[in-house]
Amino acid sequence: MRWTVHGERRLYSSPWMSLELSDVERPDGVRWEHHVVRLRGSVGIAVLDPADRVLMVWRHRFTTDTWNWELPGGWVDPGESPRQAAAREAEEETGWRPARLRELTYLQPVAGITDAEQWIYVADRGHYTGPPVDAYESDRIDWIPLADVPELIRSRRIVGGVSVAGLLQLIVDRAEEQPRRSVA
Image 1 (tube, rainbow, N blue to C red):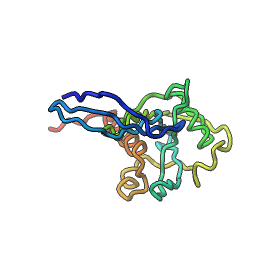
Image 2 (image 1 turned 90 degrees about the vertical axis):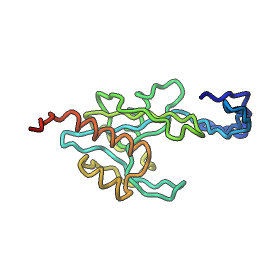
Image 3 (image 1 turned 120 degrees about the horizontal axis):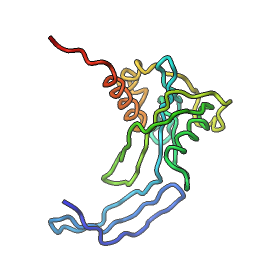
């Protein structure tokens, strides 16, 4: 059932987000103002190495006061494609330039209150170009074995939505690539 939007008014705006009140009506005729957070698109990227490890950053998020491993990522700049943003963010945050990017998955993380779109890419290799430009983004950069990811998620050392969704999708894709054994 589709809701009707009668209008919207802006309460706050910045280059990264805005807060709106939407005048909405449900199909049953109930009408009210619903808050909506509008965000620029964002990306994450899983850069892999030949040892089946993924490039991650260890960082603090002040909003949740949380330390955790994350995939490199960030905002899609105006005039930039999500793929270009993923490559740029990986190099800025880690000093590694990814090669042969492909889209891994797409998310709308909190569709009930925000129009946020997130694209997650995977690169099967990368090459080191030098120290990260955005060194303030993390305390540490490391190659994390993909086999360790489920335990890191369980132990809350990987908690960011883009990282969890992207890494789990990567693990599922890898499992589907394995030859299927017949059950006799």
